[in-house]
Image (cartoon, rainbow, N blue to C red; front, top):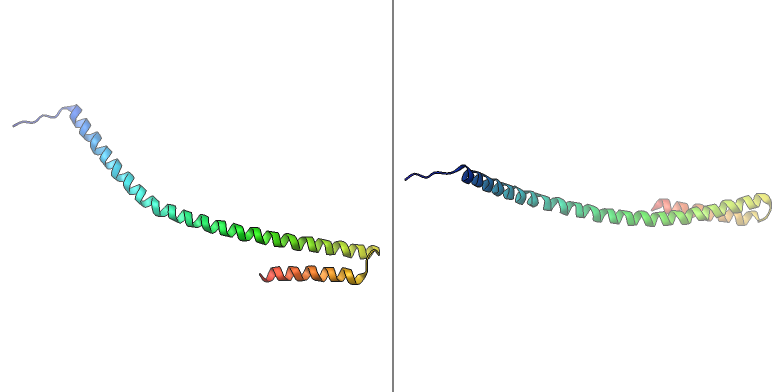
Length: 105
């Protein structure tokens, strides 16, 4: 018994084999991609936490800077003679204490 294969049939067989190999390759690629995506998800969650901590710290620093600015303003008013020395020094000490408290965190 003789079997003849035409060029068209051979091309179809080669295309079919190529598609089969491509499907296997894509399955393996997706299999390897899933752990990578899980890692990226964990990294994004960590980044979200770090961003939240940075935002809170920024708010605290802003409060301290406003207090320190107020104290410096009070000190300049002392120099102008508009406020008592004791009140100005108290404001500066309070601002420095707040700064020290923030730096300990």
